[in-house]
Length: 421
Ligand code: LLP
Image 1 (cartoon, rainbow, N blue to C red):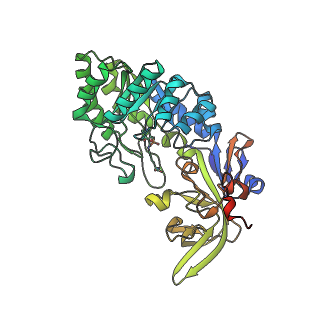
Image 2: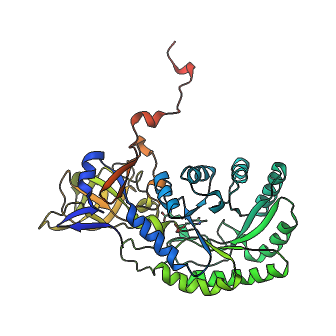
Image 3: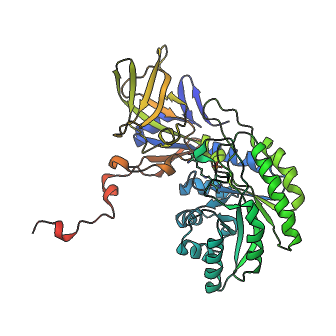
């Protein structure tokens, strides 16, 4: 359920007309609904209320500080994958004791930053990384709380580009090696193994893959107890799927129902690193129709947002629902490609999509764009990044200004030799 709703053929975000916001900020822009965000967080929190748990919002899904702040106010922690994400989470007031740091290519300065800020734990992805953390922690005179990210070799039944828990994947430590790594870790003076981490993939629609992998992980867990490694956290990763078009994902309560019985007995605190399920349907991308054109039998609607603003369709063939912001009564339905202004044939927001016929200047809403939308935006073709607007009830806030041309060249410098003498 979300708070983007049509009333008499006009799209609202909570109590505000989307078209009125577009008049003020221009297009394209991302638009987020506070109440949707909050609702999704609360439903998830409630679903796992039976067990001690921390919801670490996956910052890569949406890293705007205002979004993070709204979630921090709900009690959320953060799942981060870079120094930049640690910085954002802290800037938003997320407690360091609720921040977990994943990612297989952490640098020295990122690890030092995490240790300085005393985050909850670092999720270690290789034995080289384990050794480096041990060394850095000792130099800093601290003990690094860690989890090992275990690769359970599970097919999460999702798009291959967002599956991460197969043994061919670059992520994590193979389950068969995990015991030995924990044994090593338990003897290193600079690290304290307190958790087990997995993340098997994203946009997973059924709990089956979680059940399968967590069963494997609880076996490991029991062996660790025998070794006297005091594991207090099981981090089940993220990946709960959402509805973009026709998918029928099970809700968080159904995931919880399947997961809790497997992990409850451990007595551990459960960490969830959920991104998409919290913020995906909390955001839309609003774009304006620039031109209609056709070529042979093909019709194109050219809009002012492209793959630089929303990369998912181009990168994964992802489908996002697209609707006019103001519905034209009686408009015939036509099959079109909705394409952006970028000079790439792969620049599209939808292909062969049936849409009511639109006119130049009409606004279109691209739904379910709150996760991996703005965070994957780029300046390709020197296009300024879009604005971001946050609506709460009848109030709208500009939470990120549209970039300017000056922003595009900020930080660039021309060598003196290139200047005319
Ligand atoms: N934890 C880890 C270690 C992750 O790598 C991810 C996502 C998550 C948690 C959060 O997963 P979520 O709950 O959002 O599914 N750009 C792609 C998705 C990439 C996901 C990367 N990792 C997309 O647009 O679909």
